[in-house]
Image (cartoon, rainbow, N blue to C red):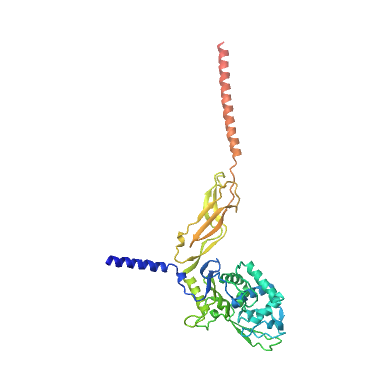
Length: 417
């Protein structure tokens, strides 16, 4: 009986260990779809339904903003059209733009991204594209350019439409591209902004507060000190949505959570999930530079080279940085080197000699190996000439000695006579 209990105990331990093998699988995410990606490498650390088609709500405005930044002069003054304002249904967030109001592109961008003003989105789209349909075409073209496979936009603000959809992964692609732009990055990390006085507002009384509670220090439930943006979203069909980025000690993560709803304790799940995913990233992963560009990886000998150049150092053509689980001993990562089959002198500096691969967490990172210096081919012509000359000298010497012996014998015979 004791042996049976012991066996059962061991089996239970094995089952528990199998169940807890992947900590990522144990993260309790309320949102229907989610993804966590390390920015510099693009490595996906967590995903849940990341390629499932979802409604994006106002996270759409990330694409709207980057297109405006890239295609418009931010100091240009826009005149608000009455027709643009008619496209905003009741109940959606606005910054109370007025017909014929004159306001800069820059101020409209802050209104678009900080409080998520839907009227600013439509006014900007009309201004940049000439119409909502044309601007939607610009959005879709840009999405395809960025590699989005399951995205279709029909408006600039995410107001619900069954034909307006995307995925968590596609939103990550759009956001990671947008965050490379300094203007965009500055706007989405701004906590508060006041629109200046205009021809319709004699005083600067439109104070805007960022809807992203992750960057709000006064938000005790949701504030995340390392968060630097990016965009919230909500419609009844899309649920609570969020694209967020966090930066700490050189390690940047982007997370996307879609259709978050609320937690069992009544909290907004999009912020809770984002914080949980960021914590998972920082608690379990680190950024490691395996090797610097131009470092010597190996040295080889080129057989047909001169004595001075036959020993060739191979250098790597780029730095390799990986995101690795902190449990991995990086000292055990051994490079796998593959050399060209036709290696022979002459070889010039910078010539590709082969490739090197490093495998970390079952992910391969590869780079080219280059010749650090010139390899000069051994010139055998002169060697052959020297050998030939030596042979000729030997033959000549042999013939000369032979002739001397003959002459000597001849002289001896003449004396004997």
